[in-house]
Length: 580
Image (cartoon, rainbow, N blue to C red; front, side, top):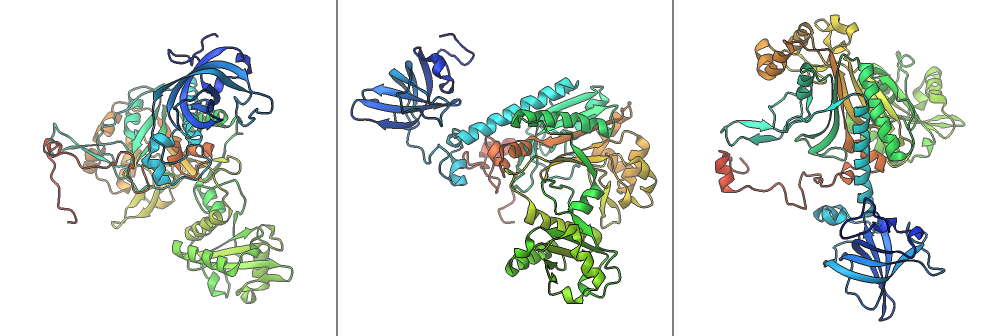
């Protein structure tokens, strides 16, 4: 038998590569015993599993190889007897016979089945993650992740980007998220932080003339965990000089579409785009899920002079729910409670029937108002129309949340719908000192048409910032950066940042800009989230080898843990009493 790239000193090939073309040849495979079946005293069948699949091994005589033992098997590839072919296995037409079995490592009985046939408590899985990783689903997910990473690297290399590694020990940065702090042994009382992102480092690379940079970067944020967030995450980080927003979106689109084709076998079409204002108006969110309709409609003009108190607000937004008339009153009460928990004053609902609108509020509506509600999105008999009245942004947000609750399919269902969301506000809200707050980092370039509004009406200033969204999950964000000192000064002043504060917080970056900063822009998106969607997983823990739990603990290692008294002394640490 010819050698292949999977051959080693211990094996000739992988279990999953053994097929009819090798019949008659003697081969050696290695793996774990997935299952053992005995036929009398002198015949045993072992299913041997490695990363490529499962191969049936027929052993004459007894063999002490139980579940999850690690074995090395040498035997002759043979056709399975007629009527015993297993079509569920890629190797189901063949088996190994005349076998010699060598036990390389014994194993205790595992605490759960590894064949994906039963649901396993996640706490148990994470406590024994090294066993969980043997399961077919986890093998698939992590190998899918590796394939996506390879595709992303190839796409960036093909577009002239240079991969550069940036530091993991960094200075504190004002990016908004809480940082993990690392005490310095050599500089008592001083600290590094683990990077939230390589944001400032990659901008310095642009000043350094690298022109096009990328990195598959490890980032850390000490924020609460959820289904799409871990303390540690991995992102494709990109920055380029002498480019526009459209250029960067083009670079990233190619990388994402290449990865999608690698992962799914199908290349998506061109990624569509909409502004932040359009996304809020139509979907009630800046992370729109385009897999389903249920668009928001504005009825404010119709209700401008209404006598119905429930609609006496600046904005009235409505949404048709196809087939929603079948919802029970208790379900409608649940939706009303959800809207109130979000901050809405209430939720109005109208069933569309052959006789007209069915609702406690229907009799108070004018003919014009009733006709407008019944005409939302060409509502049909059997539908229901939900309405929220509030300030514009609130009405959109509240109804947008209900849209997701009622319409969003699971991650594993439906097509992959990408969308770029552009023209985010540069500022959001006003702080207690009357200064606007940066919606992104303070180096985001304002929209050129809105520069004159920075001093006069900052909350109306749009930014050259852009997000990539997939199926309602924000994959990542980017922006054109400010490289001009005059514009940077105006933004700092609007934010209430003095020259002294700017120098103290951003001095090394601003100092570098004095030596010739090219126009530049960048982007970063979460690889964990992208792979999770490709794998049909609702939680990014399922595509991370060693994740943390929702409470931030590592059940396998027991982290976080106490450190030794010697380490405490060396790091010059002092602790306040617990509970103080």
